[in-house]
Length: 140
Image (cartoon, rainbow, N blue to C red; front, side, top):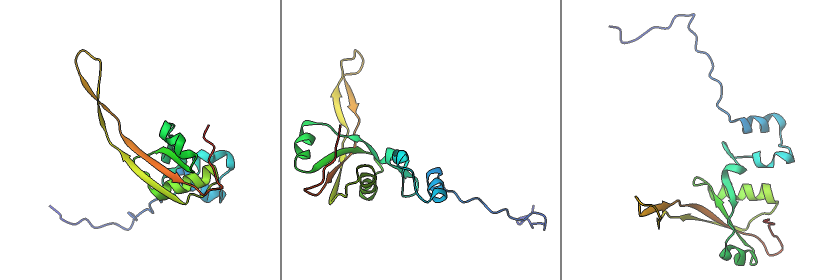
């Protein structure tokens, strides 16, 4: 039994193609992304806006905070402050002065089901985006 296998001259190593996401490849080829492709704008390596910002969080508390210049968004569980900042700048054309990310824990809820009395309410992550006094974000 041989421990080493000698390569023949005919068996040359083929260069492996570089792993680049489709979005990054488009950005490299175009050098910029069209405005209509805003939701597919490349952020970092494999991120895009649709995978970072899920949707604005519309609650009573968020509405009161929006009057003070603080906007709340549900974000991906893997989102970072840097990703959220890039997504806000790209989508809303506003530069945030501060971003806080908060994990929303799982919650036990009562379910009206004959078999199970309790279920789980899914948690996630939310981001508080602070903008300057003159700036605002239109959430419709």
